[in-house]
Length: 237
Length: 237
Image 1 (cartoon, rainbow over the protein chains, first blue to last red):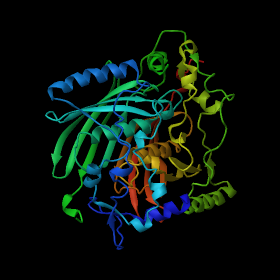
Image 2: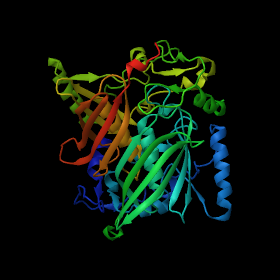
Image 3: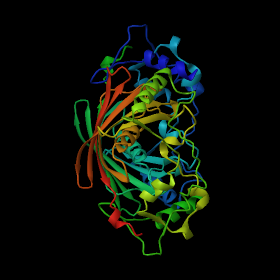
């Protein structure tokens, strides 16, 4: 089944709205609503404390929750799968339901939420809409190892992608990530990713972030990102 | 236990040899040999076909295995944990065994090998030593989803980091990754990452790669990387 999945998936995707274009199919395409309907979605919000969270992570979480009380900050919820609303935002992507291997696709889930508590990505993002910036609190578990005892650079890149994306709002895709890894991050430690929107040019969003230790003394990484807003004009409905 | 792990790990790491320096501790540091000894290591080589591999992936694998017959190419094995030899290469990193939470650290494994067959990163890398380049065949499973039906940009960044690193040899750390995401990659599809060493300046290695579809017609991503060789002079032993 898995073998045919690959061939099936490759052929069923037709993409629209991506700035540099992508292969399209001429078949009768239908929105993938069935896959992303609320019926099968587990609505657990993963951006909340669990027993694997360190003292540092919980302390920072509590501090930001306090900042949320006057409405200047908000905590962003996080799910294993897109909500119906979010899926609506991505209507530019279509599936031919005739070719969908539902059993296989039903396994699909957000990359960073596929691990058991504490083993992978533990994180929560707070957003300040007025200041167009976010703060991501991130604890990388033992399944994210690169060099022994250190967080994998790819895991850090993944969180940077998500942190930058959280500053954008709406449906966007990453076009460029440029990351300077200045110091390696110890496995299981907590880091703070401060991200901000620097510039908006049409559908292009220019963002930047830095990754620091909880005491802010250690700068682990700096990065910039270019994200592209998906064009609602190119929706088929 | 997990809570204290974080604080413990943060305090036990002292890093040497990293080009821009990193926090050190004055305590009596010992190599982390216990953790990375061969005793507990499962020596399964994960860079070999399993039932989740698509027809495309197996076909490409067979083609490259044929190229290996005359010795011009070699398949790089891949393990969940570093071998004793590789850990020796990273002796610049130390742990204080008194502070090690062995139970927690014993869970540590390579980020890209922590998934069940077919759900995460399925890949194999072939290296051409004479030409200083590698080819990585990669199939991203349903647990690596970003936008519905598409591979997460962070998963792609992770594989790019690994693919570029495979061109270096020896103990290196990533200093910069600059990735242009040109087209989104359909979930469960196979891509080919061609990486090469462009320039060597002292301990700096400048690398580049591109990510294409199996038929080479679709260019998904291009990237450059700067890697730094760890300085053997800075080893404590």
